[in-house]
Length: 219
Ligand code: CA
Image (tube, rainbow, N blue to C red; front, side, top):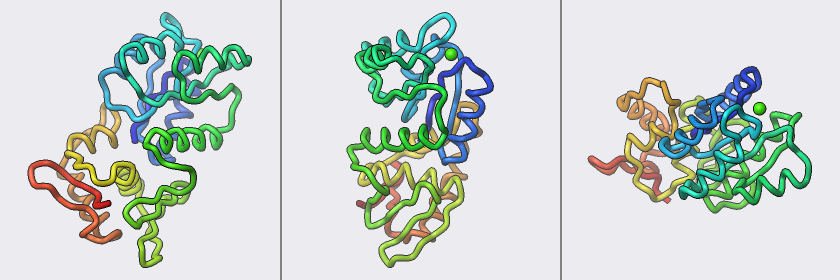
């Protein structure tokens, strides 16, 4: 899952990026409202953390532009403007969640996880798909024989994305787009290596290769 952080406080942006990466997300950031508007429209992000007080173009304006343009990315507003009427304004502009500063990183990550589950039409609790259960906090997967397997950061990110999209054929490009940051080196051979390692842990038959198309988590 790839998250865009829109925040002009450089220190906070960096802290957010680091916490997101530790939680297994790819995280890009921008301090610029106009650039944020462009990235949200053109890049395949899975969620946005959006500050409202930005120089040049406000976060609220960016959000309004996205919604007017049909961009339906889940958006969590993270702002010091936390009066009730400001929250109402945020939701009316199309926010999915709203968190006031100062905040606890654990709450932000919990809200982001819930936001993504809702966006993919899932209920609360651990992510369960195809007989697998993913523990997102511990980055472990339980297979149907009740065995727990530890996952590396990349294996975890890859499996989480697959588990959010069971039964969908995902091209290598789609997978790298959602797993790697903007300026990352995207080598699809490396992806094959991670698919092979995941298969060793969860069972080869669970990830089907569709020749010339991509991979599918068998639901
Ligand atoms: Ca700000």
